[in-house]
Length: 183
Image (cartoon, rainbow, N blue to C red; front, side, top):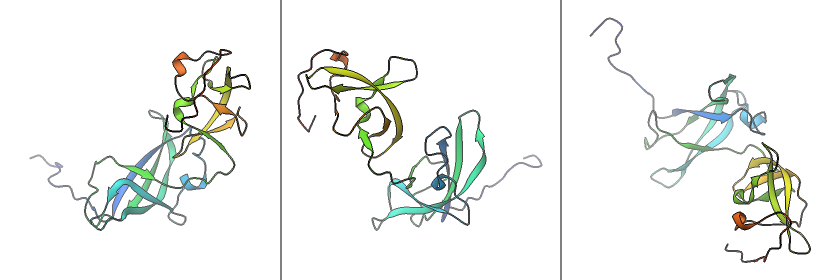
C-alpha cells in the first residue's frame, strides 16, 4: 500500500445518482425538460425495473452539464432516484424515460418505413399514389416517440406509406398493397 492509495470507496445507493448521456444534436436537446436545475427539476423514471411492490423507480433530473462532450457529441444530465430495494447499483447501465414534449397533430411513421434518400444525409419514405405506384418522397425527420418517428415535413395526413418489402420497391413501379394491420 502506498500513500494516497484508495482503500475503500463508499457509494450512496438510496437515493442514487444516475448520469444520462443525451445526443446534443437531437431536435429536443434544448427543450426545458432537458435543461433541469435544482430549482426546476424534471420528473423521470427508470425503464424496465420495478420495486418489490411493483412500482416504478422514479426520481428527477436536476443537473445539466454546461459543456458538450466532444468525443461523444452528447450532453450529460444527472438525476436522483429512489432506490429502496437497491436494484440500481453503481456502474449499472439503465434506460431513463422522461416527458420531453407533448406534440399534437403530427405525422408518425414506423422506423422501418424510413429509407435513405437520394442525396447523401437525406431520408425518404415510399408513398403509394392513386395508381398504386410507389413514389419515393423526401422527408425531414423529427424525434422518436413510442409509436415511431415524427415526420416534420414531406408527408400529408392521409398519405399511405409502404412499410414492408422495401427491398423490392422501386420509385414509380406498381405495388400490390396489403392493408393487413398485423404486418
